[in-house]
Image (cartoon, rainbow, N blue to C red):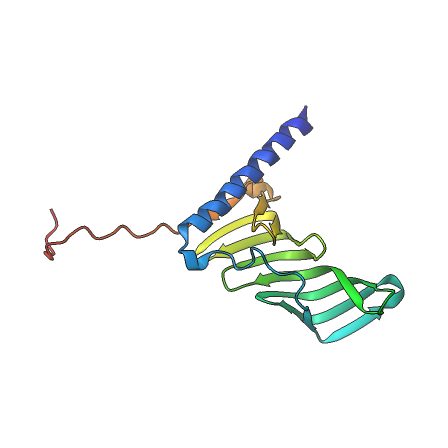
Length: 192
């Protein structure tokens, strides 16, 4: 009985979070829409770090120390990022399939910021997952939760509620409301 109830609440929470993301998009000016929708995951990945450890037999490269990954308008930052890759048999070039980030993960673009305790950029599936203490900010609007999935093709984001008992496992949001237009056309400063 409990798993069915929990599952229904989780589905409801995801639906509410998806609706909240749509509210963020609707409350922002057109210029603040996500630049990550339709992000070209086939662009080169530029990676910089203080240290690199290659584990060629396992198809891994571990970057540590102020790691920064840039791909077009997308920037990822973390303490450690493990890159998983395959070597093409024809030309020997590595093909990156996934990046796993551990320790204070940040995703930055021109229109949003995602912060969490860890992150996964699944290049093959064109999906970014952020977990831990997650915060999504677009303009002055902000959402918080424990796990976020961001689809780079559709721009759809799903946020699960927080795991902490003090937050009751709920998604939290703070949204900017547009200012009310001034209807006082007479120029008078008198108020009724």
